[in-house]
Length: 308
Image 1 (cartoon, rainbow, N blue to C red):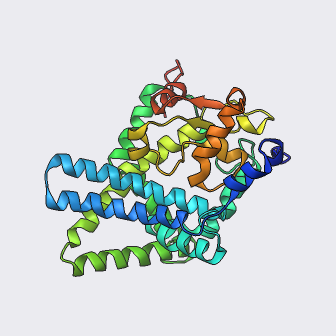
Image 2: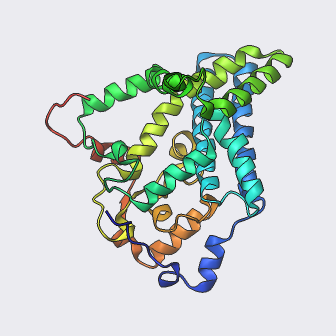
């Protein structure tokens, strides 16, 4: 099928507005990356200093959400929007965002740009994430249980780490940076005397909360969205509240409708872009949900009891 339609920003914004929204900062993206890592270590330190079940659950949720945050910032780097210097953009996107959680920037960039080119069409590589919806509540609960018990994580990582065996490779070469970064992280924590935190406060969040919030992100972005020729209908925007932004949707990822129309706008400018679109009346052309519970309501609006 042909590529989806595009909108010329000049048809929506004044030259001054578009210059402001499209500008790539030399420091805001780096501050976002530094902020993600600062919160990861702060959440871990909170549990180390005050070890109890409540602080552990809170740490796992905060760290897992920031691991998703690193993936979101890698996504910005894939669009060349993380830094104004492309070499810095790619290095930070690869080693401080992609590698920690097992992605590769270049591979993701090729995959993701195809998603933008063929959004919700048969050629869209992400179509399988949205096509099954709506589903039953029971099906969603089973998926959540698989996420929070580590089943999703182990299934994905087994394929990622050992998928190369079918090609005669001991380790899938696309995971080399993941292994290098995580080995360095474990070594650093071991030298500091906190080797156990690598497993309790890095791997556990990655195996539990990260799969869940990644699933919620995928559902919110495209599930049950009635895509039409109008690019403003290609994705959902979710009006996340403060707690949702802290634990589910960091770094303005909930403005996905805006991102699909203007995909090279840096994430830290999406709030302002959204506000301007609302002032101009574009809300009437967009699929906007009031929160993530509303999204799950749309995604589970299926009466027939169909197994996942």
